[in-house]
Image (cartoon, rainbow, N blue to C red; front, side, top):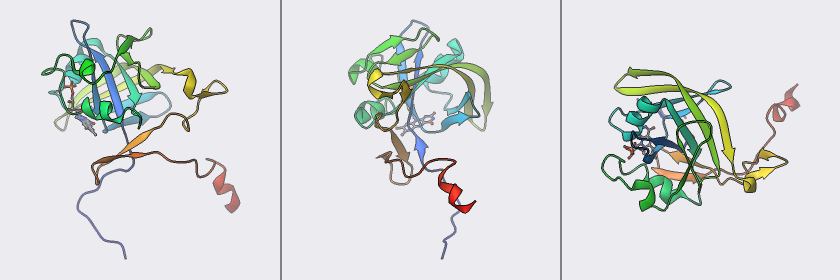
Length: 186
Ligand SMILES: Cc1cc2nc3c(=O)[nH]c(=O)nc-3n(C[C@H](O)[C@H](O)[C@H](O)COP(=O)(O)O)c2cc1C
């Protein structure tokens, strides 16, 4: 029998690492679970107004979104634990280095294999959060995670955020083909 709850959370959540520059050109990054792709080429983020990242996005109107990996999970967790406003060398402290994107004024984290480059379309202060909608204008991916020139997510080591267990879970094997597994009911 199904139990009823007053509150629910989506699962799985992505583990997004948002990269930005501040007004002095210092790179910052934060971990974000409340975000995702909306439609074919936009992303949406829900950010606390107090974050350094939020300030940086309002300033530059550009940012990157990298996907956290199991290999770098400690670094990805760390950037979600301390603020760039309080710890100036936040990225250096956990051994992350960056290269400036050639498409947006935002950093690409060298140690994370797949990064989306985004330009802000709209920012709204809603429900106590800063809601950002941005267009995806490019992507960087390490050669090592490509197969036949395309990102191969079996090579990336993606993780999801489990809100109930407060932990990161590895994304597993391909279980079926999309627009394919259902064909058996046709
Ligand atoms: C797993 C995880 C998910 C998080 N998701 C969000 C989120 O979606 N939105 C948000 O505003 N903060 C989120 N945070 C908190 C920020 O990452 C954290 O406050 C960070 O230190 C902000 O850094 P900044 O001030 O340098 O931008 C999350 C933290 C963790 C560990």
